[in-house]
Image 1 (spheres, rainbow, N blue to C red):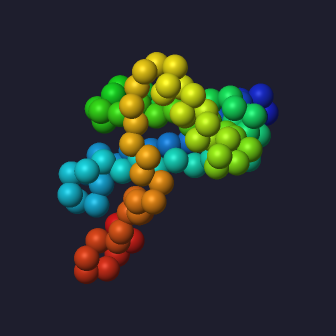
Image 2 (cartoon, one colour; image 1 turned 90 degrees about the vertical axis):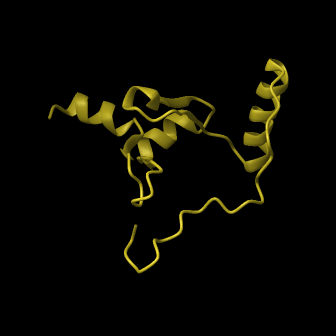
Length: 105
């Protein structure tokens, strides 16, 4: 792999989709953030994925921000500008739990 291609790849998020998830048919998206990708994002630039191309009905946009409050302001301002309502679910536990019976699921 050329140095130029390696550097370009190091500046991008990496992702994979497990279409069947933990055997429950719910896809799991795995995202890796190399240091170069974080450096690129940290001042508000974005990485985005249209997973509908992989058969998963979701589009993702990742962006960097200085703090939690700054990130929420970006979202709030964008939603207000488009007239779109959103749910504030910051206190909900969205972690993926291990499958029953052990394993790393």
